[in-house]
Length: 489
Ligand SMILES: Nc1ncnc2c1ncn2[C@@H]1O[C@H](COP(=O)(O)OP(=O)(O)OP(=O)(O)O)[C@@H](O)[C@H]1O
Ligand SMILES: [Mg+2]
Image 1 (cartoon, rainbow, N blue to C red):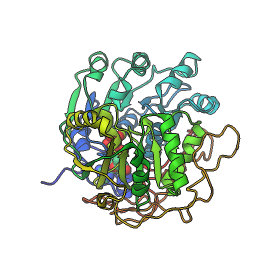
Image 2 (cartoon, rainbow, N blue to C red):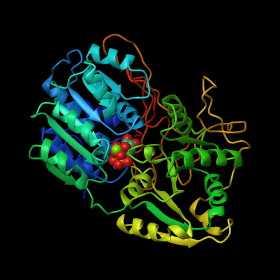
Image 3 (cartoon, rainbow, N blue to C red):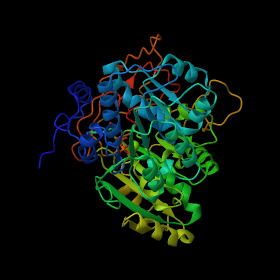
């Protein structure tokens, strides 16, 4: 059964050329399902598994629609709005958009808190075709009179259900209220549930819903395991798993837990960085860059990294603390086995968590293999994370430009020599150096994008081999702040 090409789905040739150059030639199911409607200007509700290419499913029509309408952005009045729950995701979407936007010379501006608002305000003032934002800061800038949404032609809510979660919903509603009623709205997530009902009823006109898979159909290339162990075995088991070849993302329930675990892993010789809301934006960016570049092989994160974030070749996701609910389980787990690659997901379960984990995996539609670990040298560890264990004394220090007010991870000395993500079960070598989103060639919206050979073999089962950087649209001189890499989230 051959799937239609991007061109057959209606994607303009100038954009398919960009995809081709990135090695993206075969639409994923969610792309194939939604593109005809979204390109036709309809409101779309799209659900597709984690790592199934939802970003392009909304970025392609966004660019195509803006190109078709052909307007010029006025100062402070963007033409398209992409809302996402985290700064990292905003940056990632920006990077994915750079090469597509460049085709038409569209300008972009990222908007999120944690960094100075000056450059964002300046970018808006110059006129940005597309604003990619976290809701809070965008509302601030609107209140201050720096931005109006009257000219919005397309709004995207990425991670729509999450955006609808408590805390985000009121802001999202106010923002949508400020956009023209007849503008296009696209809502995407790997989990679309009742949380978005209110948004759908109020803001979508005759929406088309596309579910490229059932809510509970697991990603096929993802192996799910539960390790039942006692509390004192947790860290030694994590050290063993993370010192195997390959990139690992570990999730903890709390910010403190993430910080403490990253420190323990570093101390034990696993180059690790942390990501959570207690870090400054600079530290978040530095840590993610270290993970992308392969200097750190393990990322220890709270759920802040659970949604949308894409890092190439994450072989293993570990729930060091079981997540609070099944949606979080699916999103966290989805940091591996993306775009046709395979991956392993492990939940550490202490005896008192047994019931919670059972309910959680059941609700997530997962039947994990459960193994009881009575010792930390159980053979199952080598099965789940095969390969030689390598420890680097002291782990990694991610350097902060200013030493004070330290919040980054790392103890001891010595970063791993050579960086380079360790790939497990991957043909492609190497980590994707983070594609910097550098500010370039100023002027009104100058945004050259230096494509650095983003080779992506179109993902036959079991492994994208990537040479060069991920989908690194680097050099995009929109005025976005921090840099982030790859089609990552
Ligand atoms: N048609 C395609 N063929 C091959 N790779 C693709 C295709 N579309 C997207 N990709 C790549 O797949 C990876 C994951 O895409 P993306 O981040 O959009 O997934 P997602 O569905 O949004 O996942 P999540 O639910 O975790 O947010 C990216 O590296 C992206 O470049
Ligand atoms: Mg996504």
